[in-house]
Length: 132
Image 1 (cartoon, rainbow, N blue to C red):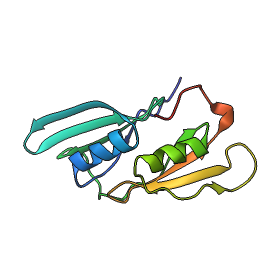
Image 2: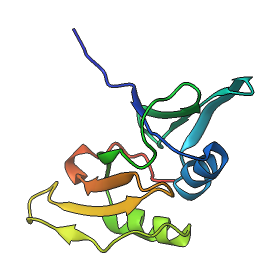
Image 3: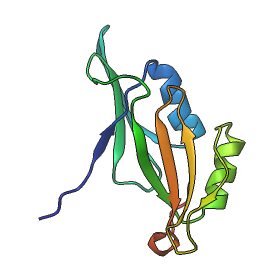
Image 4: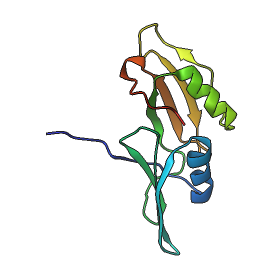
């Protein structure tokens, strides 16, 4: 039986600001943005090539904005991914090479609320998809 990870909840303080950051700056696809009432809204976005989405919301999602730490994205070309993030105005750190083996290089960035993300380079798992 497969157990697939489909959604990671990201607690944020401003849905519209977060939507712009994740869709325009990171290139995530907006899967849906649904308002149920003045006090309830859910937003789902998916990274390019990913089977797992992120969800944020108002009146639905629990958690302190900025409390998500260590969620990891994987790319096949870390230098290209970093360059694209910088071009889109994302404050991203330098490449950290923990070892020379495939999977040993990372970059790190935060969203506007301080939720922390890592991007790992794993060339062996490249699927041919592009970081958009």
